[in-house]
Length: 578
Image 1 (cartoon, rainbow, N blue to C red):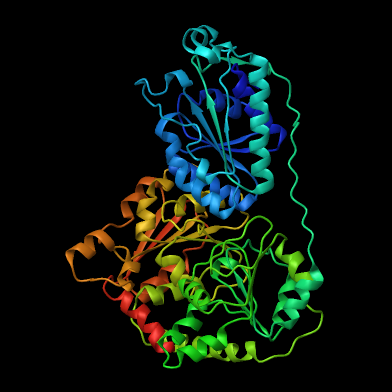
Image 2: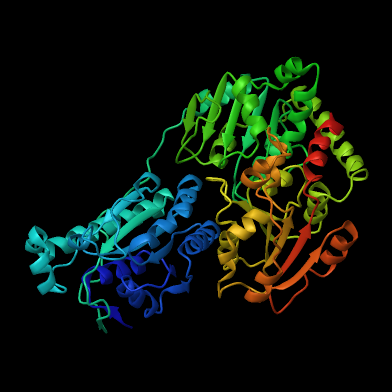
């Protein structure tokens, strides 16, 4: 083994090992050389090299999302760190323990005109659980530190070591226990490449322990409110696959006074649940009797758990037709999404539901009415698909039905996630999407990272803008040959055509829709992907026939759809089921 001869670099590497943080994503650089040496020369760590820092951070986020454990990203000084920010924000709002480690210049070299220097301390503080700004060692490069370091050069190395150890311990505890991103910033003075064969500091023992808050719950009161509520709605956002126990799902389904609204990213499935929320609400919006119908749907008690909600329609409905009581069940945090939150219950959803759900079935008419409406729109959706031409709508139906059982499915944002909400998916599929900030900037990188430790193959379904925006994700030596991408290319930001605005102007095409004529053919060739392009229904069916077969290289299936027709077919669907 080999270690940097800089104490703070050694300290970080040893603390990572002591806490079992194994996966390290490194972007090449010079200032981070002491860390790169420490991680890559130690057999405990599994290191990945990703050149583009934005891609690297999303790649690490995808791994942490799947492993449900911290993954670190390590970069050099300067603007490299800022490229991590989109993934850090996503990790913050999605509760993913991403550990950002940035090498820095000494403080006396900041703002004097040196290259690759910015004000790195606390630069991510608004979107991390903790910022650890380590102190510069005075025992390394002592001549330079003594000459240029001012008051800092007078600090005792033992005191610096103690400070740094405590800061690292607190950062790692925050990531491990709170599932929050953290930032560790380490200043290094040159020389950067010196090494030793054995650590020169003691193997660390954590002195600081953080314990999760123990919460006392009044289960009798909560169960009483649940039982007294004649109309209950359970709304589930982003949820890990298999996170909710089967017995809990069955108990929920046995309550006729409860509607369970799920989304594609909820990873919850039951015949009596409601997975296409917009297919329920959109017809009510178009109804002449909308006020009465919305009042019939309005719950007395709303229970939410999971991450952020995709459907804008359910948000608008619950903000206007608010429940008397809204509980959000989450051990960490609660957003007042509908402006009516009455209580944050800091427990695991399984614990909560087991405690308040009755053992016997509950009779009522609330669910029955809406199940009949659900059956109606499902039949109309089938009929509509037989009437429409080849467009995004029919493509999503065909693509989602064709995914092999057990696959990990990653969805890009914007049109992709919203179309997917309208169609059923097989319960064996594990579905993910970056819904913390809902950005298009790292969908491909996240999917590639998430595929690394997943037993089953991974498919990414993406739109053209998301794909081309994150095309550096393909510049990656870690992509598995069973990785698949279905690229639905409607030549621009098609989602903007369904929003209010003037679609027939040059300004709309250029600044909103971003019309283009690009394909993925040359990117696929450059990065070693098998590539096929289709542009009608028959070609799509044929293209999917062997798309998932084993291969020596990953594959891209590009599906070209009609830019000027997609929005009309989508809006027509809601008219048809109404």
